[in-house]
Image (cartoon, rainbow, N blue to C red):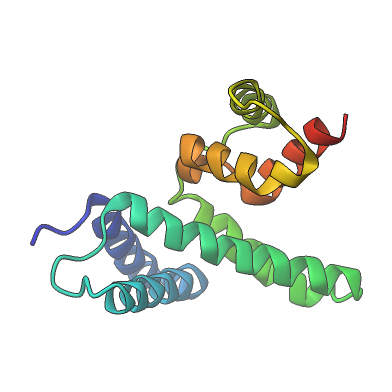
Length: 154
């Protein structure tokens, strides 16, 4: 099977980082490769490998973990623990599509809501799901949820 372009890029950037002596970046990308491998195994795609969109999902999930950890550390005044998590998230984000800003997400949310018959806060999950399927990995889940909630509680 052909290796996905994104996976190839992650592999070559990992090698480049390790060759240049950037241990931190090399390790972040090695861990990302391990997460991708785990996903391949759990989806039974060890032979074919994941496609770019599936890999982006893994990357987005890994970013989310780092951001949540960093937030927790910051809340507990542990900046020294938050910083490496934030640095990891930053490296991982390079492998995600350009993220949509609030304005673009708002527009998609409005389109989704406009296409629904009766809209209430009970439909929040449904709206979020529809927005995510339109925007794919280019929309941050937390931001989508925040915007949907604002629009539905107006």
